Image 1: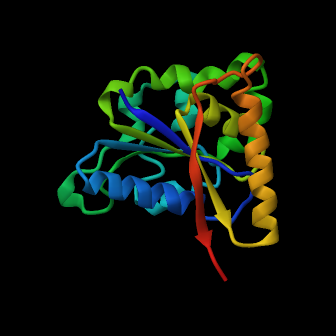
Image 2: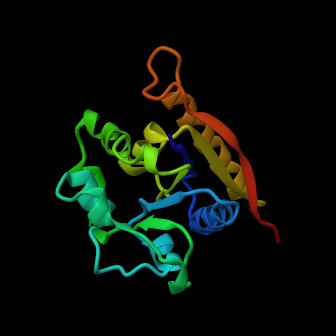
Length: 192
């Protein structure tokens, strides 16, 4: 059963997509089977990975229930040399996710879908958009661990507080929707 990690903070430009890419690549080099999921409509991880953005279904169709994982996961063959982990790309339609997935139960969609492929991977790593909303909530609800990327700046410190507050809400002993979620750590991503 896969360990599910999310790289999650509500600040943009701190290196979430880069962190997912590097973490997925390095875990694969150590012999683990890794799936990276781009839940950010900006599609940075999708572009970093080199996966075609038009030939496959995306995480959007998975969340809508209109595609299967086998049609949405881009498996890279070693001889292709682009990336070395599997990836499920994002779609611009996720910019409207807060409107489209507005029912309270929608926060469980990703967790429910991941049950189908959890035994196929050692790690599933989820990239999230730089905002509060349903997509980061889906990732935190599905994850076993959260990694908070931190930029060494005053704004970066503010991002930590927001991320910790959100995680405390998600893991609340009485009202939390994912009590198993743990913070794996904070990762300094930029220093100037």
